[in-house]
Image (cartoon, rainbow, N blue to C red; front, top):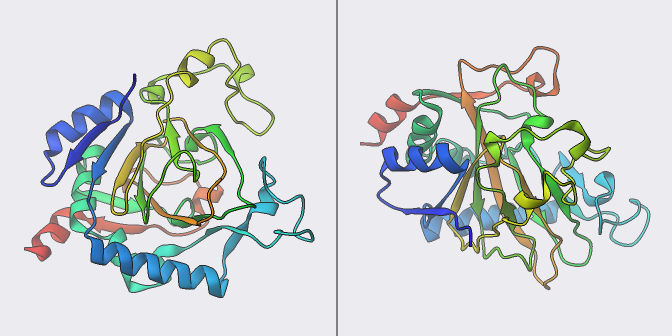
Length: 271
């Protein structure tokens, strides 16, 4: 059985980097304190309830399980709120958290890192009844940077399981290149493809609790089912890259300026 490498505070950055390089995904338990998680969750739920734009609707993507259009029942179901780092100081504080940035610095091998605001930078809201399935994909098939080296931080704001649409991962898949015929017309990996099938059979869906964080390479395949419970699942996801790895000019990845951090200065200011 495949399991994700798990870490707890305090983090051994050398070991974290070693496992991340091998698997393309690691799990950090209890990274964010309960009081901070609760406040971020409260603010996030308020923002969803207020329908503060910009946001994306399930019906707009049309993934399996989503409402057929915005005009039918459930058509206004929000899938994600965008531009989270700029919405409130609490969201910005998490984006610049010194422990999170220290891990990102170790994984990206530089003290100069940037939060992309064009991708992720979102509250993921998986609501009952009208949520959808997201099939196997890797983010770099949609993002355009000089190099494909980006790392995402997925913060659970409550319990996450396969029942309520928790993420699953294909550990080690960041090192694999599948042929073009392994993807469907929407660029999702087809699990019945002879080369993809053995990887999908090894998928792991970790159970997360509020405050847990999954760090994953933008080349690592991941997927999620719809929410089959009666309660909405909330997650906050940010993605980072080395500041020396800019988005390609004219691409969607370059549509918003990133937030740059000097991790050494961030850590020193926190002492």
